[in-house]
Length: 291
Ligand SMILES: NC(=O)c1ccc[n+]([C@@H]2O[C@H](COP(=O)([O-])OP(=O)(O)OC[C@H]3O[C@@H](n4cnc5c(N)ncnc54)[C@H](OP(=O)(O)O)[C@@H]3O)[C@@H](O)[C@H]2O)c1
View (cartoon, rainbow, N blue to C red):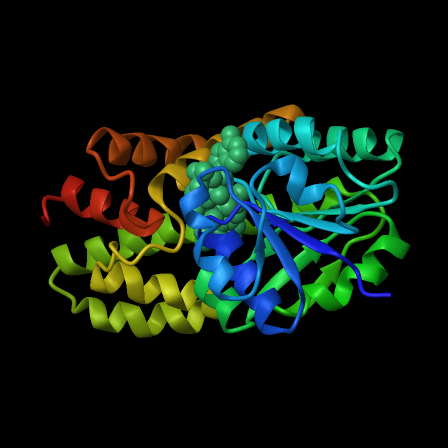
């Protein structure tokens, strides 16, 4: 029997995932809080729901892609009252492990399955099926939905039955990436101010950092291409606060994230909300007197 699939949250990531699911031949119902973002999906063959309740009532599988913990909790507050018994929720947002743990428990108590399934990769990577899906939660539910993740991912890393382990892993990877963005930006500024061609640094950095996701940002910062947005500055600011809270919750001092927060706060103070998060490179240039 074919599963009925719903997608909630059609922002930059959600719209790319939903498009890829449709391209892979899956029938989809979609819902977004701001209705205008859902409308184009009707032309792609999706059923556009008018409410969250309508979107999830008949779904066997519900994907969600929401900005943060508060948005996901508020959507779950409504959704969990209307989901079908036994339905699986594939939760792709970057959230706190603690929130994931609480949501997993709430889903279990109500007879639903919660799979924490964050993504490593930007919207373009989803559209070229080169992203990596991280998944944790009940194994039988994971086996059932794993082929769906292949619609937008090159590979899936399954981390076992404790859902929040996927969020712990995602925070580790995002902290690594964001620290690299800071370092890369500082090195370009240092080389340029010292009279060394930043192009030389560009090549060397690509050898040091092997992953294509980092290569993307090595070039983006070099070219100061901050208007083509993968993840916006507001989202980056959300993430640095999330890293600090996640580390604090387990008693690890989030020193790097604290330092990064000053850059993000400055960027927001300067009205850079809708720039790519790598525009912290622009802040570093400004501080160095380069712009
Ligand atoms: N962009 C990236 O490169 C990237 C990469 C990996 C992971 N992520 C993670 O993926 C998630 C989505 O990021 P994004 O870049 O797609 O963000 P985005 O473009 O800002 O989209 C956010 C989505 O959340 C919805 N939303 C926000 N608050 C809501 C609320 N209170 N109730 C209901 N819906 C709400 C928005 O609906 P409206 O349209 O109504 O505002 C929109 O659909 C985040 O957790 C992010 O950390 C992003």
